[in-house]
Each structure stands twice: as C-alpha cells, then as structure tokens.
Amino acid sequence: MKLHNIVEAIGLKVFNPGVPNYGNIEISGGYASDLLSDVIAGLSKGDIWITIQRHLNIIAVAKLKDAGAILIAKGLEPDKNVIEKATEEGVILLGTNLTTFEAAGKLYNLLKYGEVR
Amino acid sequence: MWEEKFRLVYRVKPMDLASAGSASSQIKVELQRNGIEEDVVRKVGIICFEAEMNMILYSTGGKLKVEVWPDRIEILAEDDGPGIEDLQKAMEPGYSTAPPWAQDYGFGAGMGFPNMKQNSDVFDVETKPGEGTRIHSVVYRSKDNETP
Ligand SMILES: Nc1ncnc2c1ncn2[C@@H]1O[C@H](COP(=O)(O)OP(=O)(O)O)[C@@H](O)[C@H]1O
Ligand SMILES: [Mg+2]
Image (cartoon, rainbow over all chains, first blue to last red; front, top):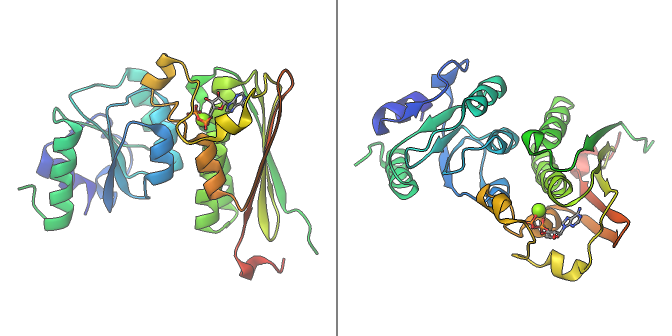
C-alpha cells in the first residue's frame, strides 16, 4: 500500500512532506518498538516503524533498516534538527496523537483488510 | 584468486550520539553500491550498528573496519578501552550497564552482543580490562560468489 494512502486513511501528520517521492513509498508492514537493538534486529524493509522515540538516532536506525517511514506516537514531536536530518536522509517522519497500540491496530487492519475499521 | 576487493574504515568517537549509527549506515550504502547480496548487507548492518553503538556508549573511541572478500565480509571493531571486566556476563541477553539517560533513548536493551553473534558466521571477542575490546566477525557470502 502506498504511504500517502495510509497517511490519509489513518489521518497522520507528516513532519517532512518535502522528501522527494514521499507519497509513492510502498509500505509492506509495520513494527512497533522503542528499543533500538530490537528494531535493528526485527524491522523489515518497507515497514512503518511506530515508536515514541524522537531523538536523532532514530533516523540512522530507519535508514539502516530501509524503514518506509517512522511514525511517532502519542502526539510527541521531534526537534527541528531531527526533522532536518530526516529530510536530508530521505526518511519520512510521521506523527499521530494515537498511542503505539492504537496506531499499530489501525495500521494492521489497513494493511490486512484494506480499511482502518 | 582470493584477493580482498575493498576495505572501509571509520573512526568512532566516544559519546558522539549525534552521529551514532552513521558509520554503519555508510557501510551499508557502500556494500549495496558494490552489489553485495541483500541478506549479507542486512547482517553486516546489524553487526556494525551494535558494535558502533557500544564503542560510542562504553569505550573511549575506536575503529570500525569492514573488509570485502569474494567469499565473505570481515568486520573488525577495535577500541582503546576501558575493556570489559566480565565478558561472559556482558554477552548475556538483557545484561547492560547503559546509564538511565541512554535507556530513555532506547539503548541498553542488552541485545547488542546477542544480535552480533546471531548474525555472524564467525564471532569472537577479545577484551582486556584497562586496554580495550576487539570484536571480530565474519559473514559468509553465498556459494555463487566464491569464484572471484
Ligand atoms: N566496547 C565496549 N567497551 C566496554 N564495555 C562494553 C563494550 N561493548 C559492550 N560493553 C559492555 O557490555 C554490555 C552489554 O553490551 P550489549 O550486549 O551491546 O548491550 P547494551 O549495549 O544494550 O548494554 C554493555 O552494557 C557494556 O557494559
Ligand atoms: Mg550495545
């Protein structure tokens, strides 16, 4: 499913919509974790990574793992320098007021059944 | 016939959290650019990231070196100290001495060594308290690539 469809269906905020090709990124799954070692081992290419981490290192992790995007939950906002770095590296930063649990549930339904439910 | 193809070397500075993970990311990009198999790149990326993070968080600085051979990738992570007092304990899943601030950032799951080991075909650690730690890992490439 295309990232822009997911953003619209769940109603996500995009912190850096200026990333080239942003809407066309293909999303194949999701991974929810705040432990970097767990993400490094478990996230698959094209996943949306749902987390409450929002410091600079999440960009390197997402880049290394070819994450489709990072979704920061619970209404938390990354600092300006984190957004800048993400844009520089071509990593999409998304935000939502939903908790990790809620966001993961919606993404799961959307990818599995084609609707948020 | 078994010549080394190329080598990447990065300096890793202690406590340099801002650029943490950048050496591993660059290594991944270089390996991809040179057509190294996807699964091999994935494993090397994991190993390098964990080794790099450990050097940043726990060492006084070191070097991360990756050698590309026709049949394998060799990873060498060497730091200048302080070494590991109880290596057996440090290798246990879940064991970590990461300070609270690092844990808030998602470091310190105690999964670094287990991740490195799991993704390596050969893995060994030499460490001497007061001197430093040296991690050596090998990831084999697929049989098709053994003829250079
Ligand atoms: N290069 C190093 N120099 C000194 N101590 C280290 C080094 N690498 C790891 N350690 C020690 O080993 C422990 C376990 O490392 P690791 O498995 O990567 O888990 P974590 O990094 O989450 O603590 C660390 O908490 C630290 O005490
Ligand atoms: Mg570690």
